[in-house]
Length: 503
Image 1 (tube, rainbow, N blue to C red):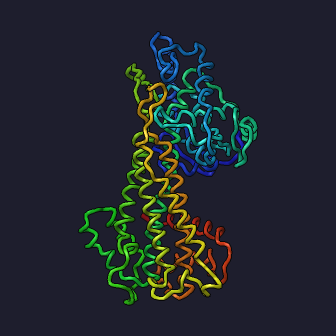
Image 2 (image 1 turned 60 degrees about the vertical axis):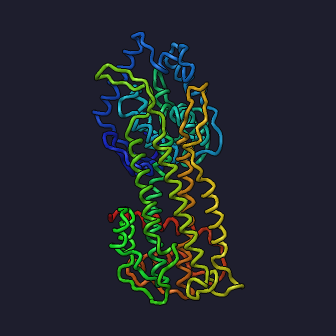
Image 3 (image 1 turned 60 degrees about the horizontal axis):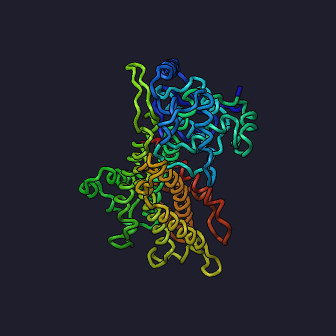
């Protein structure tokens, strides 16, 4: 039996949700119902029949890419070897083990649809891998997202065969050693197995799905922190008016307004603030709501990717068809990831501006500069703000759309490409940076109360404030804050998940 105990489960007969990709970071039990097993076996047998019929089938009887005009290797195992080996040329940093495992889960769901002609033992092998703490070592760079994620998925298959490197329990080692320590056998491939493993956008879908799962939390965190800032500063709440936001005509903006009103219930303005606050307070429903629209769109797109079939060709035993096409072309996810990236940067801009307002005594009604209890001798939030500025700059630079960077390659066989993989990884990077910005703002709000701002009056916000204060003591004297920023980020994610579960 593989080493490791599964603590979560998914079912191959059900839809795969983006949030479930996060379950793959640890041992995951995957149910293989008989109906799924049967359709995989039926398609595999159909591919065997077609392979012996004399009909040309891409990647089975032919070479790959522009070399499709030439015959492939006659031996199925040798053809599988060649499929993988010529793609082992990736480079760049290795994707985190959790992302590589999420890609295995995404690829498994695509193969389980029974349209790829993969062997049943490949499906059961991927299930076994997910039940352990094994993760392939996969470079981030190499995919253009046009014929699927050929190179990164080739590294997945390479590691499952005991070649290259892999992780076990977070430790990088030779893949053969990692398989042995996980109690897994080296994967044997034949026929169309290798091409079915690599010929899809499962790395893109995994990266984007993980980004979406975090972006949903970050969206709720932006609402929470904006409400907390409104309460702590004693701002007027007219900008959250249900009638005002309904008149704007955007449902997600109205929903954010409702969330702010829920958080602020029981609070009242101090009467000492300006009639109209800066836009980083007054326009939060419009900004955060619009970001929510982009997050929801990305979630819809990646959900379709996770539950569709990205491969070529597809096999339809019920009609006797072998259909060649372009379902491995990741354009929908490329556009969605780029749109999500822009929304994440604007949420980052908002958090940075909110922190800037908070440390400025001219806009807080007299709180000390940098929220320092003794300005000049202690600097409190000064280092956090500097890093916040650097982080926002990094997010802005990374927001250049990848989906319009098409470059012809592969002897002009792939003459237009979407670069969805790069867009998805950028989104995953951006949500990580946004977590830092929100953690810094949370610490700023905690410190603001320590140096003279009012304690939140809304009961729900007061409870959240107490949880933050329990993680982050007041800054009475300067100290390193990096560990506390990480703790604050984890706490905010926990609170956001609780809020999501209530809705």
